[in-house]
Amino acid sequence: MSLTPDELAARVARDIPAGAYVNLGIGQPTKVADHLPADLGVVLHTENGMLGMGPAATGDDVDPDLTNAGKVPVTELPGAAYFHHADSFAMMRGGHLDVCVLGAFQVSQHGDLANWHTGAPDAIPAVGGAMDLAIGAKQVFVMMTLFTKSGEPKLVPSCGYPLTAVACVSRVYTDHGVFAVGRDGVTVLETFGTTVGELSARLDVELTVLTR
Image 1 (cartoon, rainbow, N blue to C red):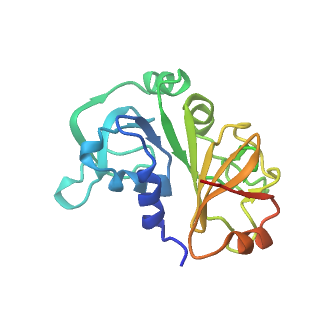
Image 2: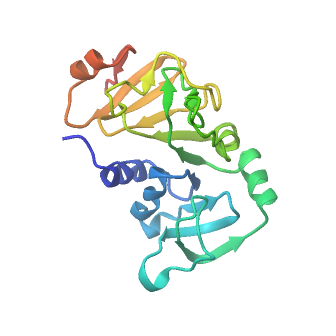
């Protein structure tokens, strides 16, 4: 079986290094916060001005003034800090984040990212801080479904949608598998409910299998 969004978030969380400073993008990536062990020492950054963000808030823990960049209520961890939007973006652009996890419409085999606009006439462009994160974080992970609702691949030879950044993505986490992307193309690191052969038949990129 392919992974559910929560299972995929837990899989991404497994690859977050201990003590890392991490930004989680709007949408599915925010679920990663719910799967990070407290003793891992990961510090979550949100672009609207907070370090030390905790998991999503529920019930009595909801504070309407305490949200992530997607306006979802969150908790704060001991030592949390708040700061101006400009300072937050300086952290992003200045190379101070170890990892960011972003959603995407498409990722190319060489790590190009398209996640802000489909190019459709009625689409609403929403780049937000994605371009700053894509070029500022030391590692860029993408978390997305591998195929669109109509079955079109989202891991592609080259992006057909407007680019957010070029050659910035290092790893792609999907409901069907985990892939490393970059100069050497696409390497399959793990599959879920499918085989490399089945994925090769559905994708237009050449897949290399990681040998151990």
